[in-house]
Amino acid sequence: MGYKTLYLNLNRFTERIIHSKIDGSCIKLLNQIEKVSLFILDDFGLAPLDQTTRLALLQILEDRYGKKSIVIASQLPIAKWHESIGEPTLADAIMDRLLANAHRFELKGESLRKKTKSKN
Image (cartoon, rainbow, N blue to C red):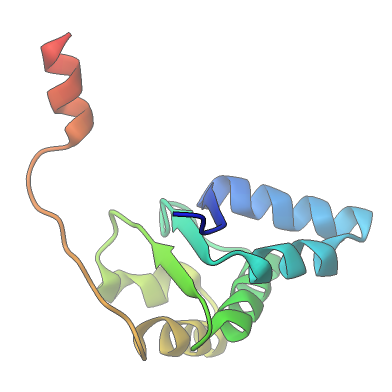
């Protein structure tokens, strides 16, 4: 449909943020993420967020709020996201931006990976 989209799982996102901080390209990376129509962040909450990743996520959410879309996929219930994010003040700010204008979908049932594997 012509929409520019960026998909990253949380591990790749964290790696990119940390690497960009080291090589001085963090602002460039944040600007690239800001420009895409849809940013998809998968596997949210599987590992705790470090301070650098929390701050980058907050900046991305702030840049996109009310302008562009973000999809966050997680196996962790939303009620546990605050704890997973870590530092309470940043967690409050991140959760506020995530949930203020969100559409939530909870999927139920078996993993599609299980279904695909059983067909092979």
